[in-house]
Image (cartoon, rainbow, N blue to C red):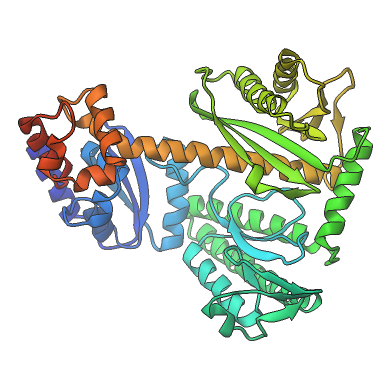
Length: 492
């Protein structure tokens, strides 16, 4: 082990101080992590310095570093090229420790939710048919964040973290903190004046996007002339994606219907296309989330009059150990939700939406049958073709992409999906934090559970003194000393 670490140290010391991509491999030669760096030597060496707090504070990174037995690098001419190469290698090797870069999460976009009363400018990685407008993709995240910060000051617009306050009539206060004093415009403004600011900011983004497209195409031509065809192909793909985004953006006309009007239009349209007995003022939507059959959870979100009622959101740990059986998981959580409403004497929603197709809808319908209740209108929204699936004998229904009813259903489904994935991620993060104890010999499940229950968290356990560890039932003096040394060891 020590010899292997010495070899790694030699490799790290010999790395170039240039931009590039590094690959970390385990003892079997499998790539477990791919990363990019402005300075390869400085970045890679940071993983193996015992004084680095961020390594010690993140058990997942520390566990990865313990597995590394080999490092290889690819030098690049600049950071943008490193980013493109990183994406290609992650797709190729699918390393277990790369969780933030997938096929559909490569470059940042700027999303402007023009369907809201007070549109915000936020960063995202996926374009959706949700009525928003998108600018990008942009390869350099840091530069894009700086641009948005500058736009906030220059145009007086809202970013994603803002919490505006409606004062009276159509007057609003955009920010509550010190940022309110650094706008070019007033912090208190009207809806109409704010929309003019958004128009100017969107025009600015369109111009920046066109400039970037021109630069990408010029660099692509230079690479092709230099016979660097691989990089030229990457730049071609990026410029094509960018051009496609620009074409979609150009098609919109900035019409500013009020948010309430859009929501009411969606509710009315949904009631019509589904032939509902009442307008769907209260809608509940379910989604199931898991990772290869583990960490199986579900979410329920509730919209009232077309708006999220977040206080009524619910999340579920699936109890039945269903694994990959989404149907059984859906049956369980629908039964739990509406069994509780029945027992508490509460009314059913006007519409229940299931994220999925006929199988998931059938599972939900079976759950209702077991409860012996009057079944509310029930549909599914199948992702692949955005098809509405009915619980009765009606055939499937596919609405136009810009139909207000479909837009409302998509907002519901996306919110349920986000809420379920967030719960799933929280559980996985908790498991990762606790999994470090799995590497400590002599500590079985009972003692491990006793420690976590006694201290409440892994961080509190790490801060505990030997005497405090000994106070836990089943933890003797020698075991306490060994555990204390283990928790405070430094990465090699």
